Image (spheres, rainbow, N blue to C red):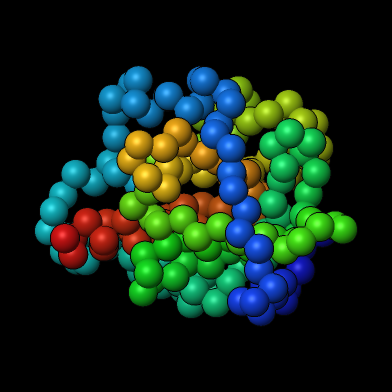
Length: 191
């Protein structure tokens, strides 16, 4: 199910995949309707002092090199629930979250999502209604902790899109979410 090597093909073999908009109205408008900060935007600070981040920064330093090189996960198709081997990485230079996957019998795909365009990230703790029934039906009970859904809009005028991923464990997922939050804080502090 999970691979330890990077499955990202050479640049000339990667096909860009266009994502449709999120079809679940409860998800696509949730952050805007509530008017509350999201996982990545809840900081509300402009000058970030790394000393203030304390333990979160120290804990994430062990995971950062792994996330920069690429981490194995599974991409889950929201319509069918079908899994594909995938990798994600955080490109700190481009301030992007990059996900690559190769569906069985299909062309390799990659999405480059600037961290600033991530509107929210949902986990099962946010409610099962955040995920399609096909995705949930394909999970074993012990896998649910590793599930997350990234909501993003490439342009401010675009409808939100989503990508559903499965990490090896809840703790691995939480480390990634913390790294994304710290990257978002760092990006906000640099503006």
